[in-house]
Image (cartoon, rainbow, N blue to C red; front, top):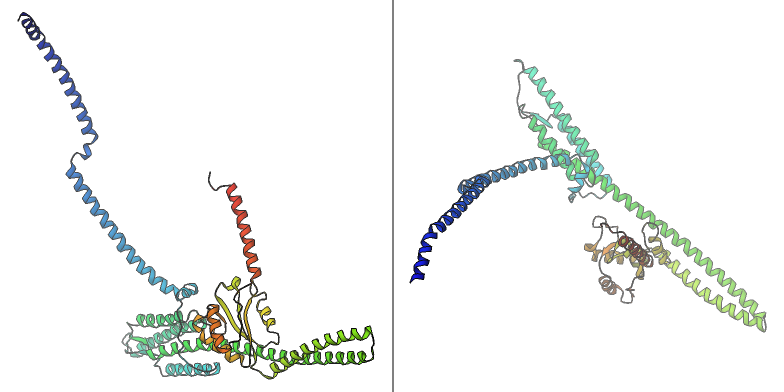
Length: 450
């Protein structure tokens, strides 16, 4: 009990001191926390009011969205103006007109350029008649100037003349510049002139008549188709001249082949006469010579017969199927005809300097009516033409199997060579591959970035 009393007494003595120490440390800690709180409040004073910040953010978001909407609206308006300006510029800019090129549908069906020319003259005469009758441009109001009808009439006539001159100048510019690639653009140019001149003359109640406008469009179409028909006739004339030269060459070849046959016949007859008098070893030599000359004579006779037949039969010839993978890619074939005695000469001619690589021949067969057979094959593969605008170009994007299938219906005996040699093309690829390997090796030694 005494020990407990001692401990209790000591506790009562030291308790105030312990409590004072705890109070002092708590007070010091409280001051530190208050200071830290003040620092935090100062640091984040701008975001203490969360609701206020949220409202501010919402308001800013609304402003940004409105700004974006205003920007989109402004862009749409300006884009519309830009598109309209592009359309206006396209009337005068040939490069832009090319990008908007459409397919032109002919309005007339005349057989030759002379008929087009005559029709153009007729249309121009109709235009002059309208101008003379004062119905090309009409004024619908009698104006008075300074109270004078005569002065008003002078003003109206002056406005009519100016409008007629302006419209005619625009139409003349369109007619002068019309080409295969801008017909629709020139139509729009005339239409634009028609609409703008009438709009400017609304206050004067003056207008270019629809009849006169239609005649100008008709003249534009006729002028374009007239020029295209002239081009077609020039191409036809060129082709006819080529065929004429080929026929003349056939006649010359036939004469040369016949002359060659006669020469071999004379040599053979001479050799036979000399052989009849020869004996021993000389006789054996003459036998070999006679055999060789007989062979040469047979070949010359066959060539002369073929040349004479080709010269007499103006429609006889050879149909060929060629490819040129290096020049035109895989799957493109040329189907044509030639009336050469040696048709391979035509193949070599096609592979001249106008194309980078030689042609490969897949089929070559004789026809008594080559133009008709060629035409039938072209018609069968018309939708596969590489050049859909020019029917005289004989290249078709079609497989060799399809061509063989159609040719076999015409002549089952025709043999097709499926493989392609294309020696120069594949050699070129090998050279290019080697060059690429050298480039790769150099690039690996010297990297782009380090």
